[in-house]
Length: 169
Image (cartoon, rainbow, N blue to C red):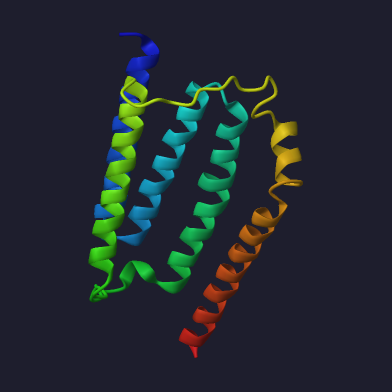
């Protein structure tokens, strides 16, 4: 067993435990902090895959900016004190269906890596994942999804402010 494999196994256990902690936690702030830990372990996975730019982007964007925004909204709206609400009838069947799709996808990936299913393997270009290449693709081919994401985050922020103002009145 190599050191990299041992590190991967330990990180995988931490990632799974933090994801389960996020799902099981009844306190919204603890759940968000478990998600921060999960994002940090994903960043270390990117470092293990020799993708330092994506690891730094993961830490700065998700663990830094997005989670600070989530924690701000949770504390501003007082979601950590909210009581349990009844589940909508269609949520449970939808969750079961999505879990089945996720399991089928995991089985497909595992069988593909073991050689049972044919996998498409191509050689990656030399500059794949470099900051210049990511920036070039982000602001040319993926400009519309990038702008839609920024507008979505802006609408979520404005919505949180509107909800807070209505609640204070």
